[in-house]
Image 1 (tube, rainbow, N blue to C red):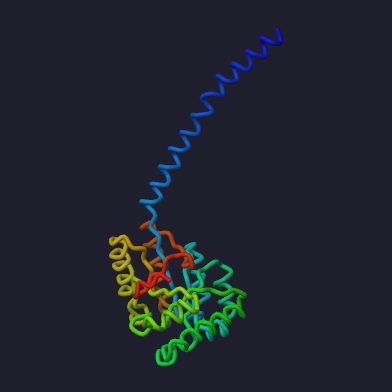
Image 2 (cartoon, protein in one colour):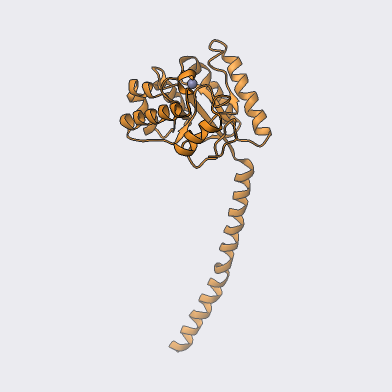
Length: 247
Ligand SMILES: [Zn+2]
């Protein structure tokens, strides 16, 4: 009797477990492959970047980003980081992307020689490290890398210095239209749509300045409604720059 009973239980177990062994696996595999496809076709990534800070307005800028649960990348100037240390720390602590924008912001000095730009970026990195205890390898040169940052200069900054060069493909012109928020909003939205239609991820140039605070909420609201996901620039993201230099 015990032997028969054991066989019965084994048979019952096999009958019950047999479908369980296969069904859930095939179901979950099908589900995850559908999920992957959906996320691939529907993912709309965007990178927001803010230059020239930190400034006296960075706190408000960070509050707005926080309110919309958005992360951005800051290309910062050495002296500004030294001056606004609390904001620099906040940018780091709140998980925003970190980039360097040099020290002088004066083209005749930054682009004086192949090494002057490298020196400025290294010095700015020292400021970031001193203030917030971190470093970064991402850089954006003053006024963008074209035409000044020629091959010999890039070999020094990117080759020797190991930095990754970032320009942009959406120019908000927020520095120019400080009083015309609608113009800045239209610039961003029309260029984002253009870039996206070409299958390219938008990299938006804005500035850490008071005027930008007024248009930012509207921009964020629309981009969110359109389903964009805001990500930060990191060293493993293929750089977008005017020279198509992938270093
Ligand atoms: Zn700048």
